[in-house]
Image (cartoon, one colour):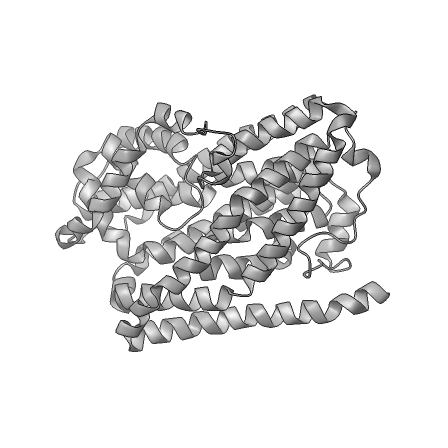
Length: 447
């Protein structure tokens, strides 16, 4: 009783923080619209906030995976969770890509547009695509130059790789590795505490980001391409509430609407920063609080951020068809299928940060239809708005995946999930950690 009373003021202050984010977003739109020069001048505020969040992503992923794997007695259990997760990610990414193709073929939103004047805007994304290389370069990039460089290079895949090695290494050490696990757990608490402080800067970052994008693109560009934006947003809604929601209800008996309500603050944070990575630490903490075991959360969530990008997958296929139609060079069915197969691989390493979708799109077109590459410039103006839908869909896909994998591996507490989603067990906003679920001694000491 005492603990609940003590934490209530902190939760109230956090509530005001997210209201401030809403006000900042509205203010940013107005400033960018009415005073474009001022809007462009505050662009760095949004960039600095996202950089602060990105600074903490590698430590969060490293600690989460090491704790998730190192605290499990049997390596086979980790393999089962990881295998199911990767298989599920591949299936759902393919489904998302296919949905994007279907919607793009039905609506043809790019037909009749003249995009020659925008061609120059695609140059930088073509260069990014050329520098990314092919599949072997992608695989080679997973291995860091040193063990510690994976935590400083900013590569999610490198951090995943080293964290897996460290987790299995600690697990193999048996009881000797218990002090290391406790040390990593303390580091994780410190990282989450730092993130709590950084999140108080969210209104400033949201204001700068929105003011700049509106000042740069103008509302006319948004209206001009509104059909594609609306189609994409509706497709994302259908995918989240239709495909993912039905799958989760049938498999786990969990309501997608209650899960979305539970993650409402994370959605607001993603919308204001246009990056699903900004909510990664909170998703980890909230899914553990909701009753999914640490092992499952530690494997599924960080891995999903690189391999389960459903929103990005739909965006890639819809945008490709949009560009082809807008340039008067529509794709044949065979070309669409070939592009889909390529995007299944290309979408896997595109972390949920602003701009990654454009570079991946450029890479896909360069590989399959180089004559369409200049068309990437057409959607540069609205990519910032579409990236919000991508990030929110990616985030939703990973939240649902955690519940599903937990159900299939029996590493979820259904009663606790029900209590948390019914608001009977509120999330502790003061620490970004679960203050209600006890951590048993046996879970921290490997055999």
